Image 1 (tube, helix red, strand yellow):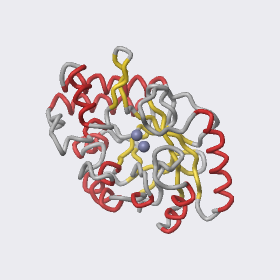
Image 2 (tube, rainbow, N blue to C red):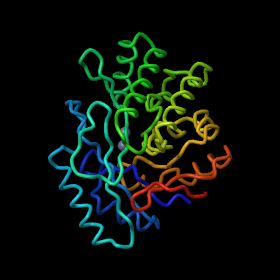
Image 3 (cartoon, rainbow, N blue to C red):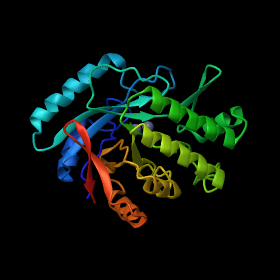
Length: 268
Ligand SMILES: [Zn+2]
Ligand SMILES: [Zn+2]
């Protein structure tokens, strides 16, 4: 059973609910812990709600107060850092590192906001293949330069792929590329997230990363965590039961959770 979620957003960034509402829902679901991972400032005005640098200490204090109020569940303080600018305040319990944007010739192109923007980015990169290579270069550079804990939504660029096929991620060159990326992330001791957020929000019917990539995670014995990247209490555990069945079928029977100040494996 998956009884935690470390990738959640509230009204402190772009989520719909207050931390208190999320905690109460987590208690209803019998979660043993809940982690908050608001978007930290990416340093560019891209029209997205982020937790400003000046508000981060207050946010952590608020979560400490809520921990006192709800001792029956363990509350963890996290941030989702963007590769463009991962400065932050205070000392979060854990951090998620995500590539949501690429900076090309001093212009920020978002990957997961609107399909039109992603298409523009692909054109700027001279095609899908070059874009994917650039994206994964950014993933690796970010993983090497920042000591975040969890890599968020590894193949985020596939968000719109079920509505309109932009990428063929079953081609051998792609699977070879992603395998090299995962090897590097394993060497850097990153935990790799299986993220059901796009299912929760109606974009996809499968998680990030896609099934062939999850098979590579199994083959390379990666450290895995499950989250729903929830932006609403409705999605706090979306697809958790289903994903557990899927990964077990692939042969994964150990995933990670955060416990006090470290990530520890447990059997599913
Ligand atoms: Zn994200
Ligand atoms: Zn997120």
